[in-house]
Amino acid sequence: MERLALDTSVLFEKFCLIRVAVLFRGRAVPLYSTVLKYASAQVSTARLLPVLAHVKGMLEHLGMRDVRFLADRGFCDVELMDWL
Image 1 (cartoon, rainbow, N blue to C red):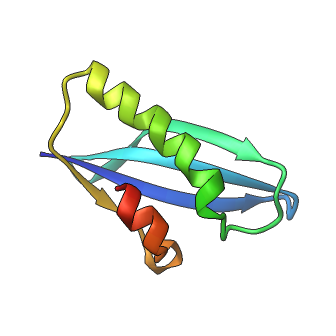
Image 2 (image 1 turned 90 degrees about the vertical axis):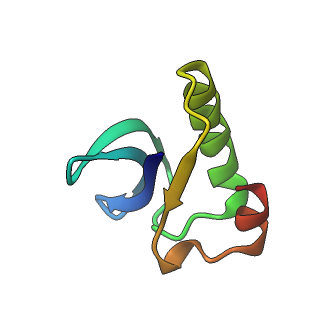
Image 3 (image 1 turned 60 degrees about the vertical axis):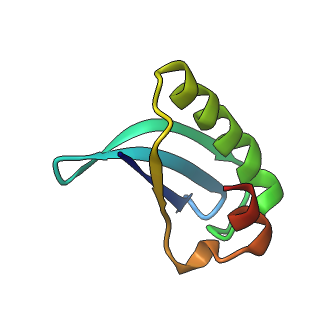
């Protein structure tokens, strides 16, 4: 089972980095990231879904279908959980 982590970080109080990483041997290996012109780390589900759809396509291409998705309490959105 592959474990993925979703994280957002604010850069220079002006941009938001959205990053999805594969957890491997205690490390987070970046899989995909994008930067938005957005001054908060709390990103709407509408902005997250294109990132997650891209990652899903990458995983399917690699034959990874059994995935555990990890995110912190900032991602407690019913729409997001439904999509996952």
